[in-house]
Length: 380
Image (cartoon, rainbow, N blue to C red; front, side, top):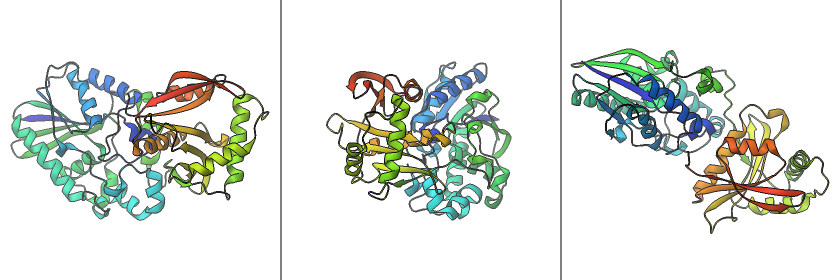
């Protein structure tokens, strides 16, 4: 009998920023690294004979949990990859949910009916996963194997082996990051001993514990969407956001004038996706202004303005704004993202530090010293 522990990868950037990361090669987040540490302890005393993963970075990093206490060589194969999401790849979940609600419903609740250009069909993904895991089992007959794959790929595979029809896939809950399924192969017979087991994760390390999209068809998903700011229509909105942010950073609006910032935003908005507002349904909850030219020669992207309305703070939604900044910069060939933050704005500095920004310099500002902070794209 061959035992395979089928493991979902640790939290990666797409999970955190709510961007679609089928074959998009997002990196593991700081929380994801802690999940990997917890997974390593779970398997510390488990006898493992081989370790496999997909060839995407987030699964290879997660496989390091097994390799930490087992002197083995990692084997990789693209056949363990996530379902390819075609033209949805890299896009915000909130955008496709808003633009294609029927297809989004099918993806979550009846994936055999989900049809997107360039995407892998449900039956093909099931056949791929069943085939590669059977081959791994045959190659390691009588041994114990750890195989790291991806959430949707694992879910459609389990639906196939458990006999759950596509239209009833809600009976098979989503697994948390680093959740484990135990499979047993005895000749041609496959059994599932357990699945979606994330008992090694304390509550504060659970990705799903911090999100609501998976809770049901009527849950408040928290998948936000983006629309471009249009000037002059949105000039008053931009001014209100900027003046509020100025007052929060400096204690008052003394020294603030809208004209230069508005003029810059209008120029930036000539580049698609550079100046966008963040929406929950039809409610505007924030905005971000990217300068598409600054840092071009040096290879960094520049956040000119980052703002979430006060009543929507504390929901974790600012991460989706930040995800847009990283996606925009990466899509323009930049290797990092930079911004300025006031020295005395300790709350903002703490926010950026939490998401991996580091201080790289100082510069005089109108109302005091500004810290220049940078996040390297793909850094963990």
